[in-house]
Length: 334
Image 1 (cartoon, helix red, strand yellow):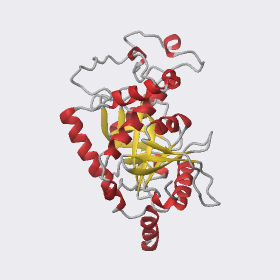
Image 2 (cartoon, rainbow, N blue to C red):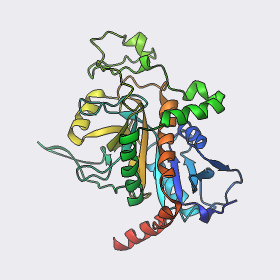
Image 3 (cartoon, helix red, strand yellow):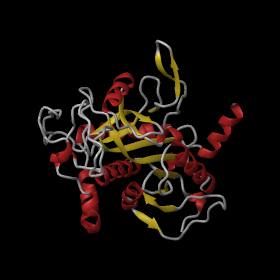
Image 4 (spheres, one colour):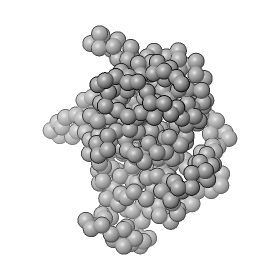
């Protein structure tokens, strides 16, 4: 059984659905409970993926947002002081546009763009008269070894496609009790409503409350057999402490900052837990949010994370500096 010092990859999930999905993609699960710091409030699942020893932690039940993610990451790197790289893997709300054909079940991977490190904290900044909102924080980019692996996997997917759907289906064939919650929903449930269409405050389904009038729905062609499904998108992920449920605000921020996805935890990690953020799209960051696609989206993100790790030699990650050393060095510079 590996000791805490033998784990080099930290994997953080925000909710139980993401944790369940992550656990399915371990090649081997280490069943013996780890010895952790007495002040560590996390619960961990340990295992192996592609020769890497991986630590998985999930935020406490009912806790969300930037500060909770920060606390989980800090406890993790103190108990597992040899962690070299991090992954934040789970679900997020897509920001589809004419430029980015993002659909439910797709995957968004954080990637540096336009001087931003891959994650943009959209609720941290200042408002200046006649100039609008100006972000004032800077978030680090993912570790070089992960960005290099992203370039590799992106090129291979472009040339040969991917087998993520097959990987998911293989797991669900073995774990039949997960099939109801974690299988891909019927494609007809993937409806992108026009931005001005607002879901009523009641709890009716979108079919009942909003209907299927073609005038209310953005018309999109079906993906062909030559296109990857789920599709993988690379770019800016927006992170903030509030759930994004306004399509008009979504569209405005997406246009201004070229945002692909909205979520609530990554901004709490980038400067304290250098990581790559991987999000499966479960809704469109609008008033029509529901949980129907959450399970499959979590599986898609976890499948991508595993495929990425399999393409990195363990000694490449072991050559990286420990996260705790990187943070210690940064604090001395400051």
